[in-house]
Image (cartoon, rainbow, N blue to C red; front, side, top):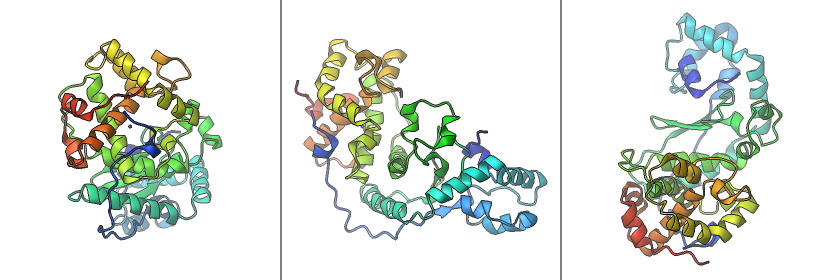
Length: 332
């Protein structure tokens, strides 16, 4: 059974070295005063209600969870859908697995608080979201969602790559690897970085897309400075090693084959799209090598132009200007 967040709402309604060696901007958010993030656990509140007083209980929860409970709690159809959801045996089992794996979220709340301090330092005018967890029914395409200043974490998508119920989804191992606790804060800040991009992207060349996706990772890195590079890029250790050693080779390939300015779907998809590897370089290569190179160029650009703030980077759609001023030239 596959329940997406949309269903729930209807119901209730990536020239440099490794990331760790990178000279990525070191921001000092010490002056940012921020109360500790309090993650609101919708799954607990929902599954623990008194089912015999469903509408009354839901009306009490409604102001606390507006993104999940925006409908009329006296409407019989809404009540039936919610009751069907919270009495579904599979979802009850998944909920219990979530509670067993995450009985307490204080550590995650602390990590989110620190990451949001960096976010607020870099994007002071941006309102910080309310953060929620919920059981999505394995909405693996959207484990983190952001709507109207609400950041929602599908906790059932972070139960570990070996979680038995994931096997029944029929997903590849490279996807299952992401479904672990290590990715929660990373994915949250990646989504927050995405909110800072200018949505009106005029060109869709490969270079443009390398920078669009690379910006998300670059800003994510600024918000989580100590993030392991394997988690940031979603690479295995072997893939990370390949990317570092093969960086100059990949760049030379892009230049020699005049691919940077192509808008053809196939090369763009091969360099940007997800998968087990980048087919131009064989099955031992990591995927999304265009995103990796994009990150490297952006990192070089920001290190050579320290007067440019992250906000300016995110709004700059002049890919050629970024490339020209980056001084990017990986060594063979």
